[in-house]
Length: 110
Length: 119
Image (tube, rainbow over all chains, first blue to last red; front, side, top):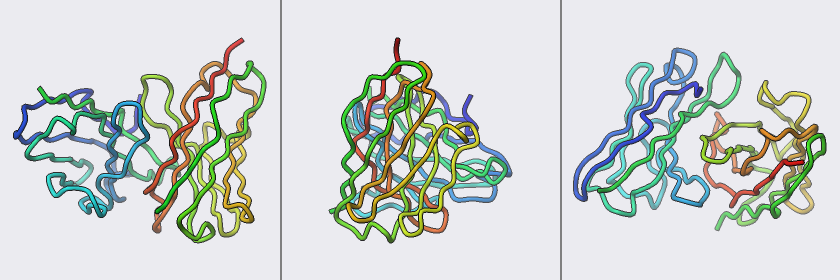
């Protein structure tokens, strides 16, 4: 049972826009930054979004993040086949005094 | 370029210990921390703890307190994670990741080390 809640799966066709939600609480997302990681099959996670809505150098602007209250979202526009991966949200939890993750969302490009 | 290269796969029996290494390059090792995150087969990510490469300060996940020890060797820019009293449910891929910023989030990750615990 993950502290942050994500839908287990999402899907879209090439060119579409999809969003992945991440729900938390007042001890994590409500007061701390949210991060998003992309994990391609068989590889290590890669930082996709930091500090709620910032993209590291090299991450396409098709990826965007937002946060409102105790929830956050990752949006992917202009969906491409290479976006097929698992996506995880993460935040520091002040009550647990540690990092917590969502259970991950498997994105399928139809 | 920042690189974190981890040691190879391990097979251990229940009750044993494992020590995984993570060699950093491409940045000033002591200017950042190292976090450890694990992923059981087919499961999500679980944070294990963090160590400052500057002064060795550590913070461990409550669930692993007493079983995990994280250390660094600044002379070789290498971080280590030792997990003791291994159980079958410790079977996972263990990742090291560079920790950055005031909240020590993870920006670069190692390739992962599979640790299998089986009798």
